[in-house]
Length: 158
Image 1: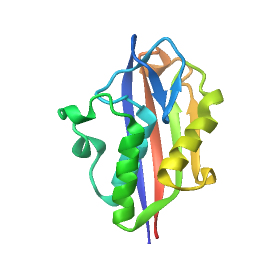
Image 2: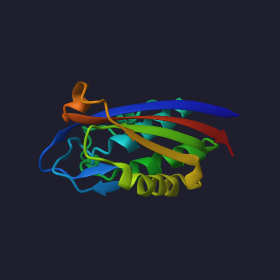
Image 3: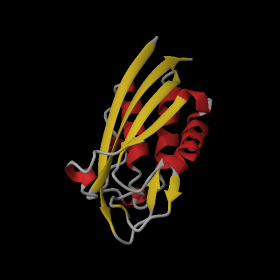
Image 4: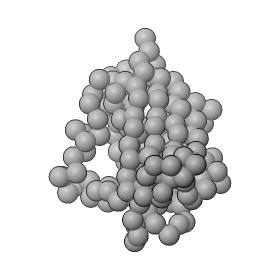
């Protein structure tokens, strides 16, 4: 049996925050605002997995009103979500994701993001795909106000 989930997340870019995407800290002048580390990619991945399981979203599992999640690494959130999937008898079959950001250029960091996600999900890096695109300077991403991400996951029994 297979299940499919989709996740989407967006965070505002601000000064004085680290930019973390896919569990990788990217040197840049701004970072993403959020209660946790605001890793927009991993939040979309978590939401995709939770969606496939019919388990709501990360806001339900990790509310921003809970101080336990303040500044937490989203890799820990993904680890928890992956454990929920395993307890339900599912594992990631494959994951496809897209980060939407005008800047910074993300290509040099994609392989490290894939490795991080694959490691936490306990799957081969060949089962994880991360892409990055711009909006040709259109919209909030194009104006450099924020970064968004989409993720689609196929969860398999086993």
